[in-house]
Amino acid sequence: MQQLYLQFKSPNQFPYQNYMFNQMKQEPCFISKQGVLFEEDCLPLLKQINNSVADVVFADPPFNLGKKYGKKHDDSLEDSEYLNWCYTWLDECCRILKDGGSLFIYNLPKWNMLLGSYLMNKGLTFRHWITISQKSSLPIPGRLYPSHYSLLYYTKGKPNVFRKIRTPIETCRHCGGEIKDYGGHRHAMNPLGVNLTDVWTDIPPVRHWKFKSKKRTTNQLSTKILDRVIEMSSLPGDLIIDPFGGSGTTYAVCEATGRHWIGMEIQNCDVIIERLTEENLHYHKNNDYVEG
Image (cartoon, rainbow, N blue to C red):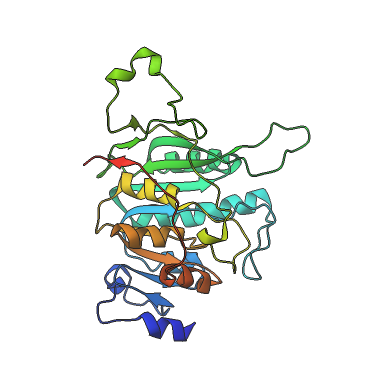
């Protein structure tokens, strides 16, 4: 890991020290011109980030489903323990967020219902509950078939940045014809596309190896989710902080779109570094049109 860090450290590295308290002791494992990555637990690192520096915070924490992420994380906590853990890092995320900044939490509806209530009690402004269709799980006996994840979208007051996104008019993958006639008003539709809704049915699953590292067996987010979130809520040069690096999707999209980023992952940062430096890893196609 140290060898990788030395390989990519450069004189033009991202000045992450400008956003951190002076007493920070951790050394990063990767630095680029756009961002910095630490192989550390997110809580002590978040506590070392200055107040009100992040334009966007995106968090995709473990879902407490008993998955095997490694020895450094227990994904089988009691419900109350898991929630208290979430409240602790959420407190830090709110603190480091700028006034007008955006906070996104990707999780199961079971948890986001409670996390959203917590954020409202902290005074953040609810913007949207975004439904992301994902039919990759197995049916559960005695329950409805779970087919979506939720993405909470809150801001610290009135958003500084909200860019309108238009999505392409849907077509049939077999015949190529348009699926909807939009109530007979197709002729009046904006030629740039349809206004993005709070239900995202166009997010592809990350299954093919060309989109992910073979070193990571757990789930990975589609770059299309992060591309949409980042383009909607930030501008090039803004600072994005993601406390749960996972496979590095957030950081890869920041690199591609010209955003600065601070990242952290408790283990297996070699997967993220590979993603940020390996030219053969692909991104999901995204034909969104961003206004402004």
